[in-house]
Image 1 (cartoon, rainbow, N blue to C red):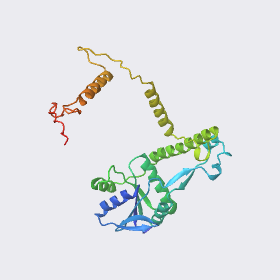
Image 2 (cartoon, rainbow, N blue to C red):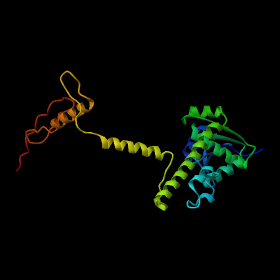
Image 3 (spheres, helix red, strand yellow):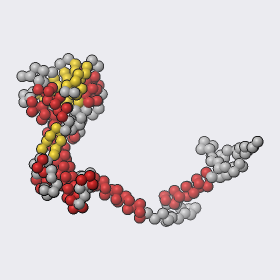
Image 4 (cartoon, helix red, strand yellow):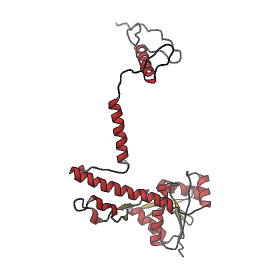
Length: 275
């Protein structure tokens, strides 16, 4: 059984600092572990990640765009490797001797996946330590205290949903990016980037641009004393009236606007005499 401190893992450093302040009654100190800030008080240590500290990618043999067909990426194996090596090193160092570990990442799907990634990093160096999960919607004294008084377990199903999104992003983006770039013969820095979010976003932009190009600025509404003008006609009429009144000349020949508070025209000032 490990006899080291209990370790709390949050999603970001600012969350770790704030949670340490709440749980320690502002007595926590800061120490450096592998170059990463860790907040300590009593028998506890709190470390913040930097979002995802591991990432997914294809093995090196799939890196050559010319030798690997884009379709081959669909069934290619996927590796998980550290992307924030300093934070991963610090977490492993703390976890190796931890007597207990609490995952306190954000309360959403992505936070659950980040928590699962932290869970797996802990398990790589400490197979026996107890690991639980706390959830809170905001980092306030009441919510944090209540969450730590009522710990739960990691929702591996929710984390799997986040992981599926991560894998789809990789497969979709890598396969289509390579396919289009190779087809257009745009490689190197000039490659064509495609992604799961980029495609629909580009479609929205194109649709909007086409609406703008197809817009007919001519007046299509009509007005009579017994009927209300269309919205477009009313807007144009308002602009026309505002333009005329805003440029009404005063005695000195300059434009004067009505005062919003009184809706009366101000008394014109006499023109400034020249010496």
